[in-house]
Length: 385
Image 1 (cartoon, helix red, strand yellow):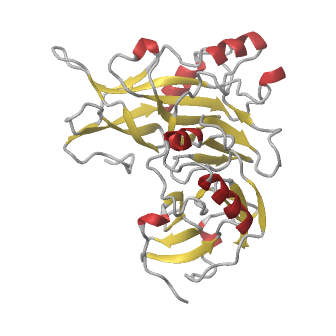
Image 2 (cartoon, rainbow, N blue to C red):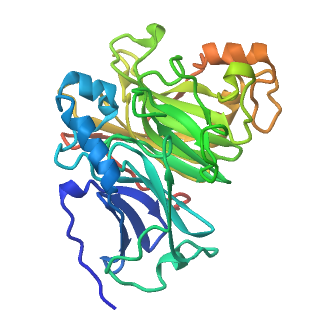
Image 3 (cartoon, helix red, strand yellow):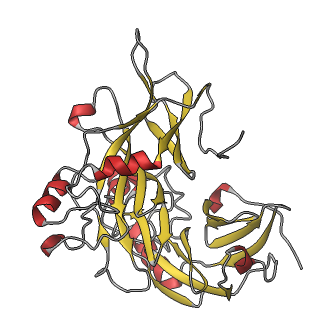
């Protein structure tokens, strides 16, 4: 048995794909790493690089344009990126999506600006994720993918775009641009076992549902899937705010609309997330920059930052799961359903055109930190006495 110490570089561009206790799965450039937490080492390494064909096509795309130009950045999704990618590695395969399959697991990557998914058959799937990886702890590369299929909408095109995902039931929920030419990130649901887009549900394209959104987290809430993101404020709430935090919601059993809207959610609504300190004799201090979200059993915890220049401050706010559900249900006529959604064309049309609820989810911080260092991620332990 051999192991490998952790030796990563910034070029690896690692993201957390899955946390299952004693191991974490990291997606990186041309590889997936299964990392043991105790002791800390790389237990498995699954290598999957961009195919020669897609790398050649990617090179044609990038060399035909002036890389780094405003047009390239805006037309190909980098407006939502955390940083500009290194042009030397743009055509590599950055693994950004993961879910367990009947045998092994599936990962999806950028694959040279052509999102693609691959099924690795290393080990049988069992009742716990950890046994999938512990059959042979070796840092040597594991066997390559057994099946490769198109991943449009399942993984981002750009390496540094934040594109959260959630696998629930038989569906993969993602926040992605639906194709290479699109700059708009949509909240989408797809059965990855089915080819094409016939079964896909998404927010409306060119609508006000997720306009300019930067997604942070997707998580389940009983019969709902919640999306946390930020976006430019509406005209009525834009007083001095560059971006506001949002929580969006869809129903897991949503079957879509009718006619030309058959691929759109009938249950998508969104509300503003406020994390603020209100003072009697001073202006309200808003922590409106959403950095991360951690899901607890009864509450959802957000790490926020203030947008005020020169004020280094972060805050943690908590939102009741039950309150979130009640607030979202208030937008629909049938409020007693397990997950209310539009039941006819008229109601669907109204919800599509007016997804933002007038009711805000507001709370004051549980904790505030002042200083130049700011919260990026939080870890919670509930029911501590």
